[in-house]
Image 1 (cartoon, one colour):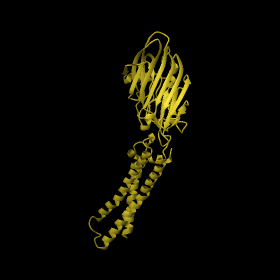
Image 2 (cartoon, one colour):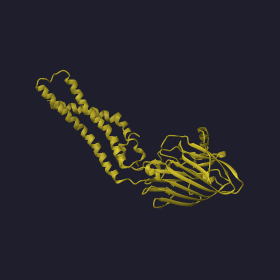
Image 3 (tube, helix red, strand yellow):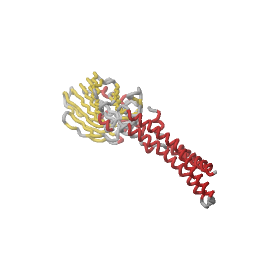
Length: 378
């Protein structure tokens, strides 16, 4: 992380799974900028010949929701089965959720918070997204989440699984997580695979991940890259979770913006005392001329001098308050909307400045102004 960023930063995608209701387990972890997605669980008498997982990360170029589509080729060796399933999300809202068996849409129902909490409390640790994951440049990073929500939204659905082969599909949109390993955001999406170990049999996993054009990417387990697409095919489950990280390269204009932000801060830090000294000198010379003309003892002259000494100090304090968010704003513009989560709101920056630095600067400015005025008056 660039060292300048620390000076400018103030004292600061859905989780999805399908599980059988009679032994429903949630795959949920609270998360900033997103969710983790996961697998159907509890299908012990159903064979999964093949899973096709397609994750479209291209909407992240505009900081939009990720699109996920999963299909499961099922094989039911017995008679027709009635299955009650759950879709588990780590976010309060699930966007554009669709589930279907073959070409038949499935009806859904949002569960209450009490039902959701009870299911989540039973989930095994291996089904939860990892708290840490590799970034693009760092071997280990922490997710930054988009909210402090602790209760996932759960959607119930039912289906009649016919004997023989069939295809179960899910489509939805979800939020990606973010981490601040570099100036540009590293978007991360963990997709939990562990619940699939509960199936009677699992065949092959095929993964397709579509990336925004020219973006950097990393996956664990590793996927092959062809252009702006990540591809992988695994005999069985390769890990408890598929961890994806992607993000745009740091643009060259960011480094120019860093120098501009440095110059802005230097001008304010050095220029403030100089402004107070100049204002004080002008006041002192004016006082000397009044004294020479015999009007130096006019009533109210002392109060007017104190007010005039305070104004440049207050102006310096205001410039200091604005310098940090303005500098952060310059950096954010240079990152084209892909800044990492630590940047936050530039105009909400600086509680420490408000409480400590700005009052000290105002007092220093008043001292400099009064001292300069006194010397000039003599």
